[in-house]
Length: 79
Image 1 (cartoon, one colour):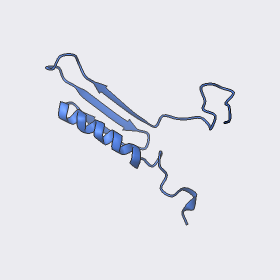
Image 2: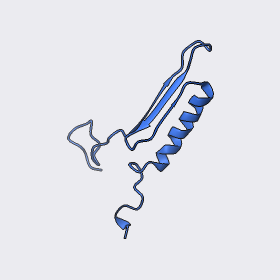
Image 3: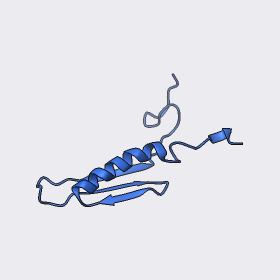
Image 4: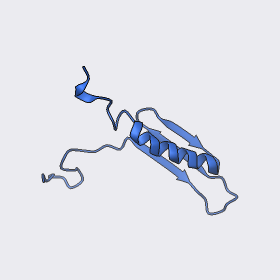
């Protein structure tokens, strides 16, 4: 297994964060919750209701399998 000289960079190359999700869930049930999910490919979702926050979380997780930055369509096999 290759070893990287810099412990912060994986041995197989540097890694970049391409998608984020921020969820605000206050302690009190009466306060407003919110979620914001975004990706460098252009995907972006926001919500300010509890049901909407759950939907944003599901969309964010589903986007991981659909994102063109994480999963190139055919790569070098394209003819």
